[in-house]
Image (cartoon, rainbow, N blue to C red; front, side, top):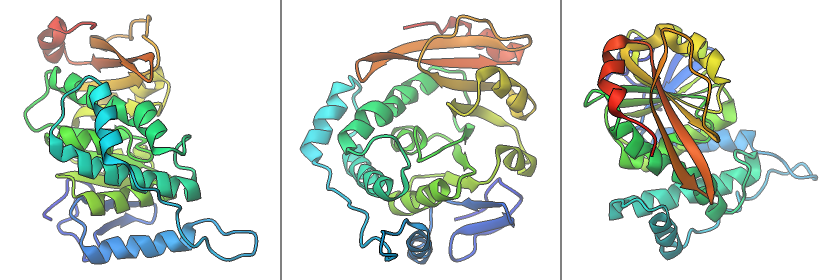
Length: 285
């Protein structure tokens, strides 16, 4: 699998887990089948028990109707490669099944998960391509949760290395298992606090993503020292932000789109004058 730019680890052990500290480990995209089985065993130990004390017999996984999923994808208004359908269906099946045991997201039906949570990722891919990023950016997804927007995003936007940072053990466990199944290129999970993750990095990020991780002003303070001088901070929001960010931050792009019948927003901020000048042409729409 090669070196990972997280914690200075030189190689991956057989089970795919990079032990950095007791509170922080990294899982790469190319987990071996043995590693996947190890996480499934860990899930068996963690999953909830019923009233009689026996572990739940299964995760209640329900098959995703591929034809219905293809229709929902078309409804987003974004054209996607046909080969996205199968991995996306697999991810939705895994997420809906694990969600019944672990309450990872707020919706049970895979259709609701797609319309209300997953569709954002495809709009985000187009937004990221409109930004002044290098061809192979280093991207950090803070508070990655159950992989939204990260996992569906990486199915259609595979540029550079992408790190999903999640401190909650059950969600990181789900993410690592999903990546073991999906084999998304150059996509990794880092389990632990964001502050610990930042301390382990040798380079600054070209792109930092946040979806309901922190209020945006706190996010600026947290990320400024760790964002490349020509990098962008992208915030996923339910409403437009009317207030201008404090100097030296500037908003270089703000984009509105429709999902689940409601308007949602992306906002891209930078703190370096060079990237701000290049990004000045982007606007709403």
